[in-house]
Image 1 (tube, rainbow, N blue to C red):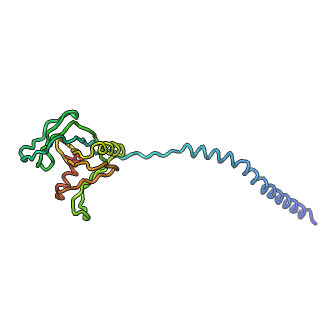
Image 2 (image 1 turned 60 degrees about the vertical axis):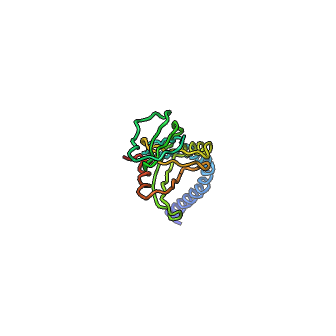
Length: 198
């Protein structure tokens, strides 16, 4: 065997021995470092937080007032919007259709709407106005309706009764559907008023 062959053979044996040693050392180091690395990753992942920004509220809060007395039939010319009334004062105001005058008590609640829409419901063959409230307002509204079953409440916007339903039961949930004998144009106007659009 020549000197070159011996030298090449020794180099090859050294390389194979080094690779064998690495094959043993790397898994052992990996096993030893795994708890440290996973602890470090747990710390990093626990520090990552995500936040969701609630949508900007573009609709002004809507006042709810109890209906105190009988509803008087009005002539449209009698329905002059009143001057601004403090929340704690009673009101005598007309409905959106200018067909009735309501005797209202002081403001009982304010609800924050997030969305309002009007549409035709083919199942009931009626126009609907659908309002969506924040979860906090839905909770407050549910408590109010539970305590005032059998009473009438008025949704008031800009000195006008936009809707005045009678409370038949506790109303739960963030979405509320208002229905009645209104035309598509009237439902759109009610939705517009609830949105507080000029």
